[in-house]
Amino acid sequence: MTRLNRDRVLHAAVALADTAGIEALSMRKLAQELGVVPMALYKHVANKEELLDGMVDVVVGEIDPPDPIDVDWRTRVRRRILSARRALLRHPWASRAIESRTAPTPVTLGYMDSTIGMLRAGGMSVDLTHHVMHALGSRMFGFAQELYAAPPAPDPHAQAAALRSMAGAYPHFVEIALRAEHDGGSVVGPGCDDQFEFEFSLDLLLDGFERLRAQGWTSTGAA
Image 1 (cartoon, rainbow, N blue to C red):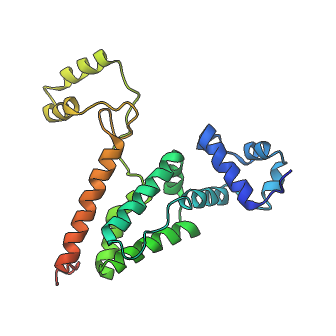
Image 2 (image 1 turned 180 degrees about the horizontal axis):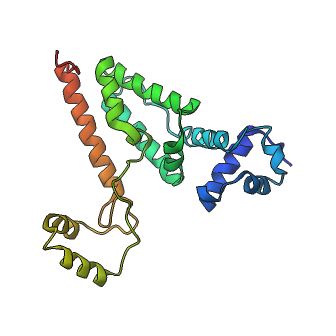
């Protein structure tokens, strides 16, 4: 049998969360999956919080490395963030795990540091880069915090009736809801294409960052 080590524990935990969900993850269940007693795990992770930290590092470690320095900053950052999104989509539980961490993990810090490096190499000031990182927020890791998660798709006839009943009080909301194409798996909302919405927002941000960089923008208003 393969010897138990930290890497094996973390990858087994990721696989368990992928198949059963993060809610099903426990030290006891993980020990069962690995065929060991629970106490054996504590030689490699001190507790469940450290386990989750390590799982986040595994996922973030799947993000592609940056493009060569001769690629323009916008393309480098965009490709890296879309790689992060692919990693997060492979592990649907990971966004909640990342949000739950109270401090960046080592691999997460490395990813953030390299993103800052790409921005700085692209000619952004420390001041602008600081605000860019805030503006990107969780999008840097491939997910966006939406206002409301989409409920299970209702019966189309019931949905149409519900929208008709809302039209008088909320005409603009209903107009948008009726205009959108339907994507039953969307987390943004019924009728939204998650990938399109993610890239649309990301491109708006990147274009705005480039305009500010070209203008020599500073947070004090002095170029």
